[in-house]
Amino acid sequence: MKKMLSMILAVAMLLSMASFAVAEEGNWKIAILTGTVSQGEEEFRAAEKAVATWGADHIITDTYPDNFMSEQETTVSKLVAFAADPDVKAIVMCQAVPGATPAVQKIREMGRDDILFIAGTPQEDPAVISAAADIVMYADEIAQGDSIMEKCADWGIEVFIHYSFPRHMAMELIVGRHQLLQENADALGIELVDVTAPDPTAEAGLSASQQFILEDVPQQMAKYEGKKVAFFTTNCGMQPSLQEAILTQPNAYYPQPCCPSPYHAFPATLGLELAVGGDDEAALKAIAAKLQEYDAVGRYSTWASPVAMTIIEIGVEYAKGYIDGAITDRNDGVKLAELLTAKIPGAKVANYTNAEGTTFNNYYTILLAPVDFADYLQ
Image (tube, rainbow, N blue to C red; front, side, top):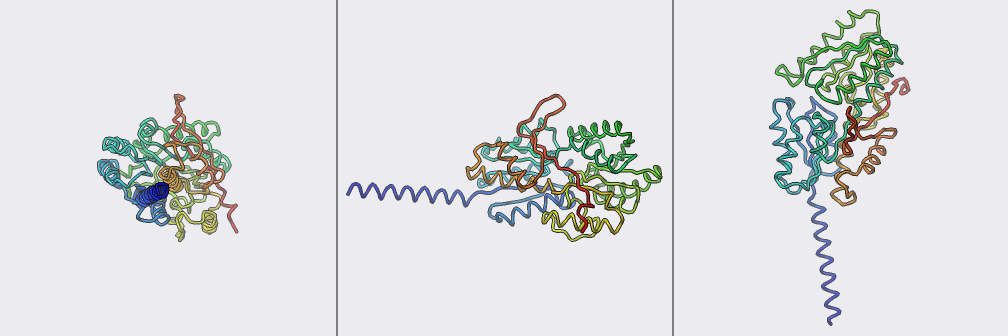
């Protein structure tokens, strides 16, 4: 009788534990904060895709303000609001605009040390965001100083126009890329010209920045008449205007968007109905066909996969693994690299090392080779 009672109690305990585990499984949430469609459609769509994949019970989303530089408190409050929900076990933020670090600090002060924080495409210095976040992911901006100029060398570019503004040119990785662009330009005999554009987060807003690009590109082409001129801007919101302005200029070239991807402005520029984050190869073929109509196939390039979207997708997948216990480290570099390279074949994943030689073991950079759209013509 005692043996039977013991067995019944044991089974009851196992059932109780199983019920608790199921409850825990059912209660988890991952929060995603992105920009709006106007500032970062890819990230916004990636968050939508995560909801569709995992369900609205498990994925909650919000957006930070377009004018995030002057509304950092709003960004902080939205992240803190996520953490106020006890079911939220992880937060993925992409782009991790200013406000990310103070938000993490407030969240930790709330006693939410359990929340895993993943920062994608950060706009705070690597040392700052690395100390706050558990994992940081970014396209390898500095190495693009090589890959962009290699593409320009292939094209025979003579002048390289670099559009940016003081806020961006105070960011460590953008500065590092610019320095490498300058070094490579000097070595290749390419004239690099810095042009200051209006900051989209300033009072005049994004429309002023876009209008500046539309007006300045023809002026630059007139100034450098007869020369092959490549154009690059550090800002996402300026990409549609830059692509449009270059399209009908036979000697104007576009080596890549600031956040390289088949979906970064190309659909809007070319009037294509592409499912953002859908079939990447199909998207590249559609873009190539449209560029051919403008005799521009050999004047544009990008990366074969949308890195910003992948950062969110892999961030959520990693966070789910951590919540489940399949990933036991807050920062498992091997597992993260496996997830990234499985999603983006050929991607080079590395830890970021700054100019002083300091390596940040939770800051991961991702690099892909530029595409040749001629390879996607059918």
